[in-house]
Length: 275
Ligand SMILES: [Zn+2]
View 1 (cartoon, protein in one colour):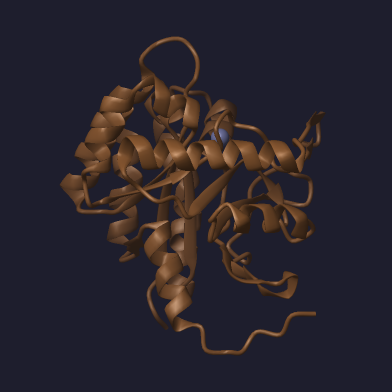
View 2 (cartoon, rainbow, N blue to C red):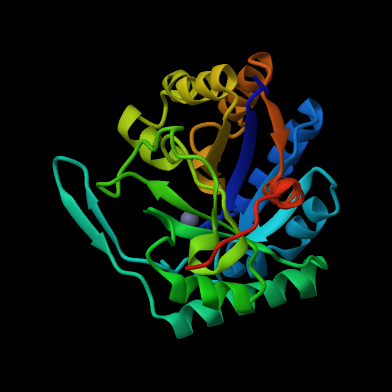
């Protein structure tokens, strides 16, 4: 059985008070270079506008793939989150707004970082990704998006998402070249809020089952962290480093989302039937 692969993606999205993002970018770049592990940054356009020089610096590093997370963190789909204790609804925006958000960010990435954007993480992520929304897929396709990272909640719009879910193509919806790359486990911000932000070891432990499963079953483990949550109570990102080192010890290999999409596209052999 082939070994498992870990896709490491950071949503870089801080829009609040303070200089969170430049410090995160500097430290994360250092750690990934130290370990020679590639990663993808999914960037919010407004966050990019706040700290262009810091993004320019990291975008010049070949270990970092640059993609987007909309202009102002708008949800593509409504989430209806049932945690067992509460219900929380956060509404998605309309198609015109989605187009505007994606286009503007693609232009910003091109203008400031000289990068062509082909991938997107959907803010908050959704159950079943965009499998029920061919209209959104069409809009994303028209805006140049070729891989998505939107399927990152379970049937209660909650977590975790098990590794039974693996990346898939949207071919039955007529978009055979758009790959959904999924998000597994817990979003770091959600589980760390539950465990306690200072409980770094507990968070590292919480990630291990997904890594173990990817290693033993030869699966993809798609991992999500944020700039602001990664650095909270852990300015040196020691817990992030511990997770990456653990994954390496379990012999996982690493790819950026861009390279994973490219590799999968090249490996496609079956003709696609569109119904
Ligand atoms: Zn986000």
